[in-house]
Image (cartoon, rainbow, N blue to C red; front, side, top):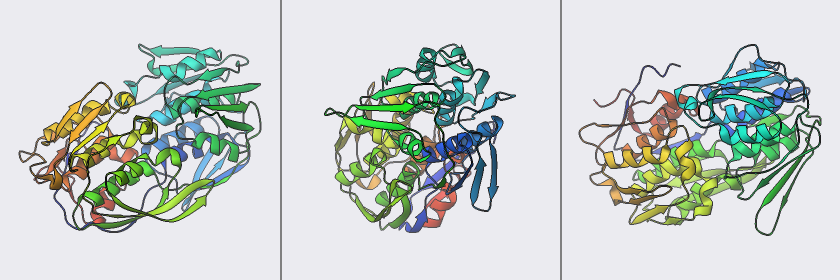
Length: 452
């Protein structure tokens, strides 16, 4: 897909969103399924994979390093190379918009004794990679990068990488995961110390593939993760549960649009990912968690969501890691709540696909929301019922090639008095290709060609 041609979209006040939907597979687990399947010995079979561009780019990267990847019906089949047996890619690995795929693959392949070059689109090229490159340097990896440790990046591993003990300086599952993946091809024990717990799919899935990995949590909640390098990984069968970050958009839409009653099936309920649901419930949201079950070692449930009158809350700062991708759509929900919603600890939002904090604040203001943007905070004064919200002149929110900004503001337009327009909706395909069709099926009024 080219980002050269923008396709604006406009959402208009809708009524009675109703229906039952199944959300595309979780993005984090989908990325890791391709990576670990490509690295493991034997065959990995994956159903429910998110087939967005970001994940497909990760699959292509694994293919470029020797894995065999094919699709048979609804199942992706991967014949892996075996741990330690990746091949040098013949061309640069192009990750498009995929920060997760890029940063994790840097860890996975960086310690190999050959050159690997990483490139991406304009958004990814502008994003800092130093947080992953610094621990790789400690392991002996030679790094050539553009100014500010940005793409393009070329890595060359040493003859034998050094196992390290690395204390993660910020709450980042990507950094933790990159170090652990580097440890897979490093002799000895690689240790990651994580002061604040982040999503733990890497640990759970590596254990599932047979890695010797242990996790200890002390009385202060500090986690110490130890991985024994150069072990054997064995192919697995994986059914990817629904992505909670994608779930957030129809969920918030159903809360805000009067008369709505929507059921969302097969949602990943890993405790490191459910901060948004907990916060919305504290705001008064009617969200029923049904049919809770275990699938592939992960908690999964169905959610019944009904329109609700929300009230403003102060979101605990320590909840940020469990909902960092959901703050844009939470800010939209807060715009319709009674009272003030305060969100702190948002510095990580400044280094996402865009400076998400600035993008959210400017989009809210453009559409009549009273809000204050701080260095790492956002304060939103809500307007119940969405009176006077939206932009009657049709001025478009600048999305900065960011799929979550685009979807969040389209959700806003479904409940605001005036329409809400985004300047581009093409990049939604990176994470949620079915978004427009799924929302239309529930009764949402979204026009894919901008203001009429």
